[in-house]
Length: 377
Image (cartoon, rainbow, N blue to C red):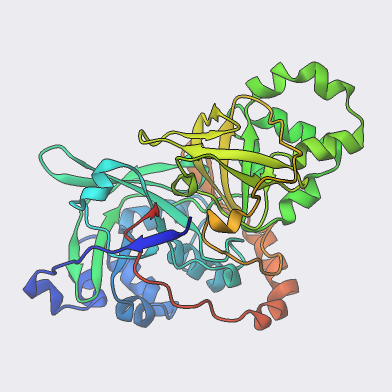
């Protein structure tokens, strides 16, 4: 199956349609600082001229709050600041009244691309959007670290798209090791460390990981303890599908076999209720955003098939997102600790200085249509 992209027609209010993004931001009561940042970082023209776009606009209070905790967008490395703001700029005009947003969570692709050094997904880092109505429309926005925020002002139109204001900044999706350190997931990464596979997994890009919970690791404790290093490596690889970022929309109702990093196969499927399954077992949590792709949380260790007769082409399931050179694995991520945003700026600056020349060989990504929602054919 192939992914099909759908768009909704957006009818802009006539008076708002005459105003540029910059005009709207400068006149809005709480986004003047963002306006200044976009101008200073030379992003305004690009954002203004991009058709069918959505800007999750940080308010002045949000920008000041970040600065208080060491994330000063006006004084940090400008390339990193641009990357952070690009993660807030989405391809596609997402109105809070769009029916699809009220049915299920939608995946919105941002303009943050691999050349920024802040994501390792070829098509760009993703934000999750859900709409609700309680007397008025609002959007629920999920970013890295499963950070959830709600829009303040919604559906502010401008000439080429729509703005929603937010009073906190989005969190960049983090590496697999950092994501595994959150919640009840550290047991699997301890196994990865023991198997000496950490470096391999951190270098992967455009990847889907079925991430076992601590419960799954505990249930398999005796078996894991009996395995040697080589067997542990294989087990870790059994949980990784390379070359494809398989969000829940890529799971067909008819089970399909996909090839893991070990060369063995697992079965993936979905149902009409939006649930997804791997090897017939329901995924406990879908679409955990990571810097190299996506993770799905499972409560059992996987046991892949070894029958080579199955159709193993994941290209028939997900978008054909090609691999690029490894970037940004140890770079930056916005980390939330007790509501405090921290960024490893020094580490990122040093990395960028060492790797800046490597960015020159990246070819521009092909222009993609405005994405409003993506469903399997």
